[in-house]
Amino acid sequence: MTQEQALQLFEQTGALLKGHFILRSGLHSREFFQCALALQEMPIVEKLGAGLADQLKDLGARTVLAPAMGGLVIGQEVARQLGLRFIFVEKEEGQLVLRRGFRIEPGEPLLIVEDVVTKGGRVAETLAIARQHQADVKGIGLLVDRSNGTVDFGVPFHPLIRMKVETFEPDQLPEDLQGSEATKPGSK
Image (cartoon, rainbow, N blue to C red; front, side, top):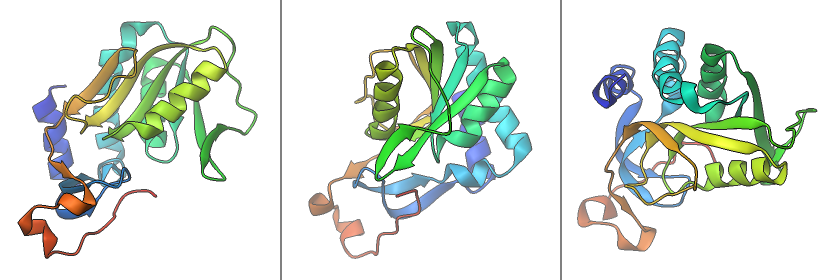
């Protein structure tokens, strides 16, 4: 799947929003990927999952690990298409943790799959958990990289879409956003 094909799926489902948004990172933007809108349609999930699975298939993983909430649907679909085990980390008292009896064996080859990255905080937390368990992280798969090339996790990084998206600190908004009300449509 090409970047243009993936982007077309986001536009077709109304998942690429335009306006004034506050991202999970605290930055402001004129564009927002509401992946949940695209991922509510199983045929779209299957197509996006196939595109990502194709990029990740030769990395030799046994398990897909995803951060909740954003990575759950696409992580599970990538695992399904690759025939791998799927587990996830979730928030507990504000921190991501491995729960529900999930285990990561030392040396276990795994992939991390997430929906969108801007600063990469959620992926970095997930990666830290994998490393605490001594996993062999083979790579990271994403639907959308909004980081403008600023994130480096030290492992192979495979986004379906690389977007050059303007982001702004709250105290450095451009004039057109200063007078508009910002919405926070993503997860908290």
